[in-house]
Image (cartoon, helix red, strand yellow):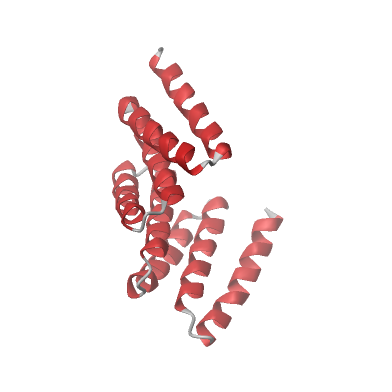
Length: 163
């Protein structure tokens, strides 16, 4: 927890510097980082506050990749809060944006997040479908570490199905 608190300190220190430099992308990225550190510490409401700020900035930029990342982060926080409907909605929006900018690792990540949320909601067939799509993209991109994680998630989902 001390490392997360230290990270918050540095991100908080960086924020006014990005603003002074009028670097909206840096500011949005830092707000996303602050959100996810607060989420890791269990403060989902604070995470949502930072994500709402990041979202407003990201929408003003012509950077669909940054917007997709922010939407992914919303999906993660809502999943932690147990709000499957919101989580799935944000993840689907992020997936569409990752696809639009041809961000294969981002697309694979969004598919994995969707799969995990479907799995939590008990829809294991939809989870498997999305895990399989993510695995295909991870294989194409040659991201072995993620392939291992996704294969493990597929195996666990089949185990839950009793297959």
